Length: 386
Image (tube, rainbow, N blue to C red; front, top):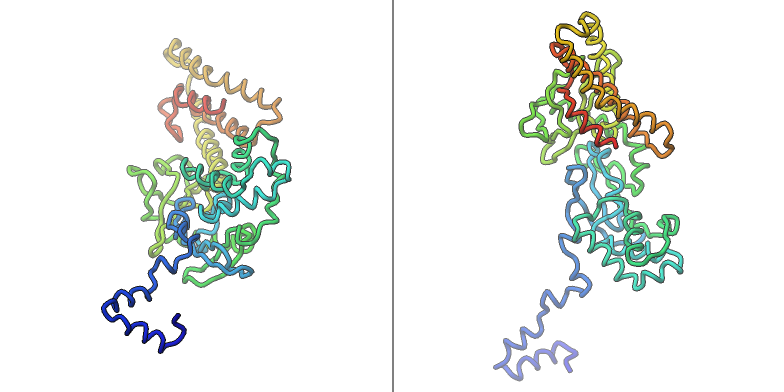
């Protein structure tokens, strides 16, 4: 037994032929220092970045129970605060999601929980299935977990059966908000609270970036022409892309073009929030249709409805009615359906303006419409409304 420096020296000296072997036996290998449970720590389980709405955000990990930094932290530049996906953030990363799911299952009432035993294995299976189907981070975590439980066992389970409020802090994403110089503005796990306080500042920072980049932005369509911000009373700005890409230093930022209703015209602007851009754009489209069709209606009063070809105009009228009548029926049906959502009703209202555009395209082709319009185009829109 060696318990002193002199004893170690004597042990080494007594068999010098095996000195090198003895020396190696005293040295630790990397594998000796690694904990067994650390074998699951890998880049795919604990990624250095997370992509949200096309923006790559850095992550950091910290193990210190009780500390505000404990768990995973998403580093969020102020310019992209409104693009952080709260639903995706609930999934954390695969390596941490397993523990979160296990604790969510553990929070279930015992009569439901017993169907998920062993909990660790059920949690691992759930996360692995999502990874294998390339659906990790997509959809509401709790809803997906409920479907998983139902698929495993035909039991009744609802959202209120889970108790997410009982989860420890590190099971919720931490958001580190930084300014354009990388300085921390806030560290917060409640994204709604963060947006409530800094949302306005984020929009201003984004608009400043958009104004500086708007002439050189890259669209999501290779053949699309660069977008030009400004005021419009007709569709004079080419094909409008769904997203535009801007850069600041090494960071790539996504923007969402939308038409903004300005009463007598529309303005083309770029938004940082895809949901807000979609809402505003719908209103802008209705305004643009209204402005353009108002001028077209005046011109139509100067055009003889039957002009010189009665049979052609009769056919045009039948073509128009082939999409107008189904739309009218859908409008009537929607009035009696309590489950019809607001978005569907909005799309039905938008279709009315498209019908007016089709009327112009059929009966007054010499007049331009805001967008190319045909019966086939509206038939496809109708199919998506059913």
